[in-house]
Image 1 (cartoon, rainbow over the protein chains, first blue to last red):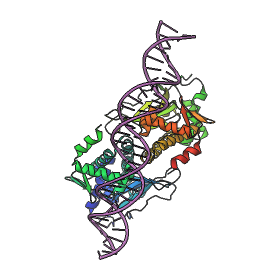
Image 2: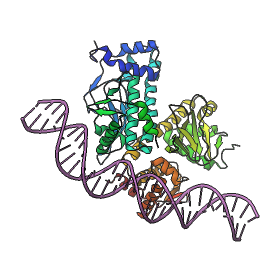
Image 3: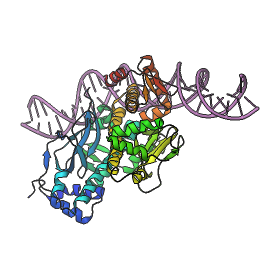
Image 4: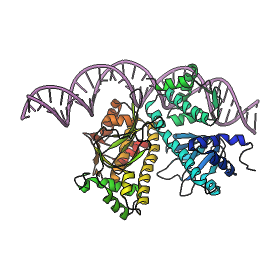
Length: 235
Length: 235
DNA sequence: CGGTCGTTTGAAGTGGTTCAAGCCTTGTGG
DNA sequence: CCACAAGGCTTGAACCACTTCAAACGACCG
């Protein structure tokens, strides 16, 4: 029995995610399910980066992670958040790639190369394609991140990020009627959005007062997607 | 005779660039030289994006280009600048990828797929690897762009960008003793750095007064690389 | 029940934007 | 060779967004 998750439904979001993002066929998805053996577990705040010479590809099965860089002066930039079903590259932190993958909650993930090793020959190409596609989707998102930082005001940045996270979580069935669980601190948001913690707080308050979204106690609720979107493209 | 360039030395930077960035062997580089037939020419301000369903990979032989997105409200974000030797993806501008490649100067470039079609079978894998490597180097740079926008002040952003461009041009032999030719307007810089044109101007003035770099008449001169770097990591 | 981490609020300062006008440089046509 | 137009650069002044510093409050955990 896999030690990976107590109930199969716990890891459903990851399967839905990689199936949709990677364009897996039903049969390949079913075979993938069989490949999921015991994976790696990391506690919150663990840094995944390998010391191996080559980057390692990891498929996130459950939990939240982020890609980030810590600057010499201690400031941090978060490049992206990763949710179940996402694929991340955990690379050696070298001069040219000073980007770490850090667990935000407890996470479970699988080394893609190892997993493919256990796959049947016929399934391997499709699974590999799915994983690399998921990875390049994350690359595409970086354009949006740049626009967010370069062209948006504080409230818009927060709104824009909430929309992105909502949409991604919605895809994998991790939202409910009016919101979703979001295990981030306001400091995480600040690091991702290039804002001070204080101003993130004020921006969240502004959104709450406008009735567009409310982020409290690790949960986003009363999310008005259309309203948030209008706010982002305003002005 | 190739209509591509009047003198072979005009396209040298592109060869040096792809050779270093892609890790080409001497023989493959020599063979590449032979493959360079008449390429595509675009005038300044031309938009390269293909209407084909799949993205097209273009190798820039001469001239400057940029990747950018225009927002509904007319604001523009420039994601990156491309110089000779760089490889860009010219994709259909769709809902998920609203990123255009735009010529800044007159540019000459080659469709990579076509070029590989003319290559000898033995050279093809190495050439393809070189092109995709150059492409992923550009992807890596996006992390730096995000840090620049998220964590730096205006003067630091300008300084940081000047360092990046200097280093890249230096690699391909397009710098001289104390500076380099930079065919951008201050508005280009503003669009790339998420700043107003006016403030870019003031930041450039500040750099000039500090004796760190002077950008005038399409040329960067008196560039003090160490000084600029110190400025960027200060505070 | 006390300590720690995260959130909230206020007040003051600063960095960047906007608007508006003038200048410089380059290219074009007489 | 000069005149003029157009695009790009420069500067000033007022305004606003965001930061910083400082302090208090709240929730969760042993």
